[in-house]
Length: 236
Image (cartoon, rainbow, N blue to C red):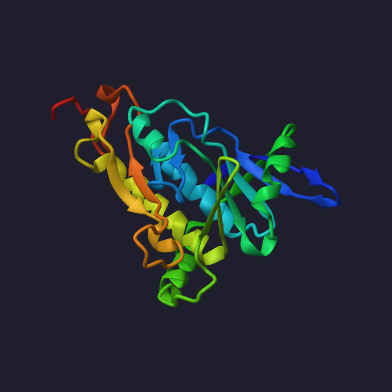
């Protein structure tokens, strides 16, 4: 699919960063800190599909920081659920080889003022292939391929590399397809449709980080249509 981005070139000292954001904000999507009380993404079909594309782009852009602003979106019907989980945070995706320090992020973010348009195409077949490669080796606990979460300045960083970003992209794509078919979504209920917890580093403690993916249809719910149906009325 084609993905339109906004590209920035902020400079901190002698270091120039390449940062991209989605051109159109994911206004109906929210993220609660994966290191907080309960890490969760809540999004509609467009939001989850957009995250799938952004993770796919991140997989093959080792020198690029992907910044997804999520703090200022439209209030959701289940906003209290996000608040109870620590409140909204933004999302940053970066390869571990880039060596970006989360403590430098506030200075970088302040320089994201004038961007230029960038259009890229994601390769679904390549993403699927590399996601399968991650699944084959994810049983090794000492692997570097995990998504490593760090939270700083109201931003959740997921630091990883190609195959695990590809696997996360596939999880979001599957969740976007599954969400509209879940029972109860017409009434505004949340539906658990996926998880990135198994992409995070193994942790046997009860307080291990987690990041579930939930679907919530966009209001007004009476206009929501299930895939493959020309009409879908409340109560059907």
